[in-house]
Image (cartoon, rainbow, N blue to C red):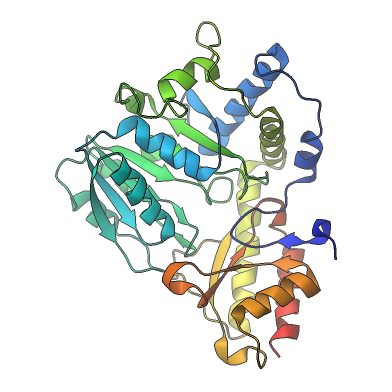
Length: 364
């Protein structure tokens, strides 16, 4: 079985949309070519649509979702700032690490892995934080955290949200929710290969940028001169032309299908997978009511594994024999849960049927 035949159903990259693969083959233009700048402007406008925002500074950072995370933190956090971070998985932990490296006083608000964060606990954690940061869709656990209550009660704090696994797969409403800084990744529900991190920054956050930013490469004040085209386009760094072609194409697929329809497709696939797993006696890991449709976490059925085969061996047989990739657990849950992604082009009911059938054969 060739790599091209594989169905990527892990928590990492999904299968790209065919239109995206075609876009990657287009001739490369210069990063200041008028035709490319027009395409960049249109890409940014399409990003505003999926983020549901009017923020002028909405653009793809050159780097994966972690680059978007760092961009948001280093531009608004100064040494000594109080930063409240919700932690109920790996990526909340990463937020703490990045904030600490900025010199922040990090106030952790925790929930057990598999459970959602309590918005009231986040708001009450500090009387006057500079930033409240939370992961919308925690990739390590398959849990959705509520964002709207944080925006309503944030006070003077900036609300910073990780939308890496939610953008394009769940409803995201930056403006209505009061989100000031958000970042995502291209490789999840947008159906594009990894390499860019869509970022959106509110005018309120722009008023509080660190001056000077400790990162030259991720300095929003500098990047904005190139991205927004205010006055002459100021050269900052060479944009990844082909990846922006790909993102433009992926967002075009979403626009053509309709964002609501794309979100509904992700929901149908996730619900079908989770129902099929429960019917087969599997235990779902994420708390009911906060389960992501695009990323399902399931407890490894240790008692049903074939003799002499551990959970990693089952995942390997899925890959080698069926061409299906699923992911293992992280941290304390390595070897204890599987993470199954139905994102972007991979979010198809036929893939649900294929995976459930393969599990039936492997675990009986």
